[in-house]
Length: 282
Ligand SMILES: Cc1cc2nc3c(=O)[nH]c(=O)nc-3n(C[C@H](O)[C@H](O)[C@H](O)COP(=O)(O)O)c2cc1C
Image (cartoon, rainbow, N blue to C red; front, side, top):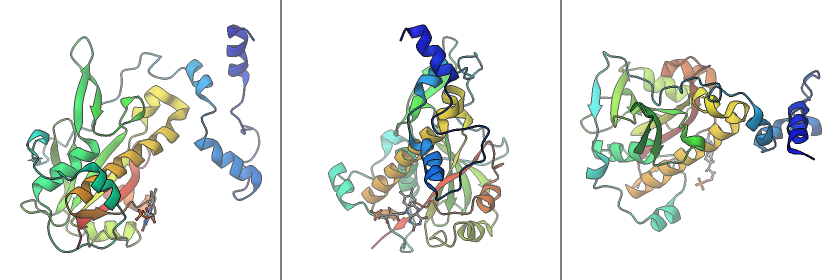
């Protein structure tokens, strides 16, 4: 087949397993499973190369991080180069990693929190366009196309010197901004996570996705990439927590409709994607 004919065939091809006119196959049936599994397959990369993504259309990339409310108090964190915690050898951290669902009452320090935030979303390097605008960031975790589609919300229950509340990490500034000091929030987030370990934890990582950051470049391929990206972030949290004598547990089973409003996100352009309570163990 010539290159031209190949491209024409790709343009005409329907996504594998999809029939736009048919009702979706019932979940649990063979056809239903096959339709659901399409999400996991890499069958559409040829189609993507011909697709008019916003990037190819020349649309400016979305911001790398959400700006804080101008009135929001900011908290400086310990700079990555000054962190003295978390020096455990990586082989030991990998060997010891496991999910922890109960924690002791010991608070985390600001330095430990700084380490966990840096380990999960910290910026290593920035790429700039010719006019000096920051267009891409490279971080402590990989991300398809370096799109980094996440925001990190941190529910603080017990951190020495940091008032309890909901904060958001600003990776480009390595700071926290206060989102809410509402005292009932921790209990409400606990319920939205089906009672899974929120109130016991010293802090809770609540990651949201802003899918357009990835869609701008990858269009219809984005859901799988965003899901893959989130695993890297949470695994770094597991290893970093282990290295400071703390533990965590990935939580995928939370109530989407309850959690999104508690984080103050719209549930469409930004929504919760993963949760992980962290506390000292032993
Ligand atoms: C994507 C994902 C979602 C998970 N969701 C939950 C959850 O909602 N609740 C929970 O208690 N554990 C959850 N876990 C933790 C797993 O149950 C745990 O990783 C598994 O039992 C293996 O144990 P280990 O992590 O100690 O090796 C989740 C893990 C992953 C990777």
